[in-house]
Image (cartoon, rainbow, N blue to C red; front, side, top):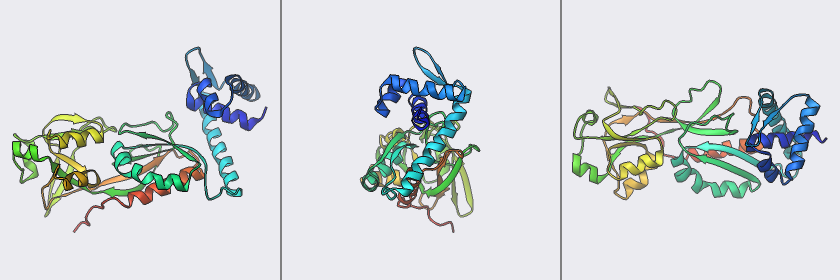
Length: 306
């Protein structure tokens, strides 16, 4: 048994959830993958996987072993990269999860440069605002707006997002233009609520002006849990929004959204990149993280507090 091949086959089965899909990604036949995993279990004298006719599940011992295997494979990959001609060009697959608006408006337009620089890196990107379990979902890193409260993750603050209040012209024609944020708590005004994937509750935001501070949620008839849907609802005139300015700028320039509450300042939204502390950061993950940091620097920054 080639122990490296066996560990690689085991890790891929865990990630793919089936021997068939693992075999396809490894370009092996299913029988070979099955034999490699069986040989590994025999060598370790431990059951790593529960197999049924419908699915494959990792055992408790298998889950612990998988985390060690993942780190070992990453270290081997990094070691090979460091002594090979490909040192400047890491290779392999990375799994990331990012907010859908950030993916659509920021990362995707910038990604061609990354792919040109690192053509041997394959990115599997989840683009959603849902909370993911980095261990369960086999994700290398996530990017999220707002504080990271999970103590089991390593969180790196990569920037702060400037926030503003906006409404569509059709909404303002119908409900009038609010002159003070407190007006959002009473008729005829409505907001579009954004449901936090972390708490399941509609977010409240803090505004400040000349020593005055307000915490607002507003009256909403619609709440959504996806950033792209939230933006679309506001552009459609369904209510007032508070948005990162990178999401609003193009729509404001086209007259589809109108900025509100001049002189008021929203507390900025911190942006974090998080990863499991026991997940070895291979060269391919490190260069992706460094790239994200540089891309986020191009976003509008909050004004300095006076």
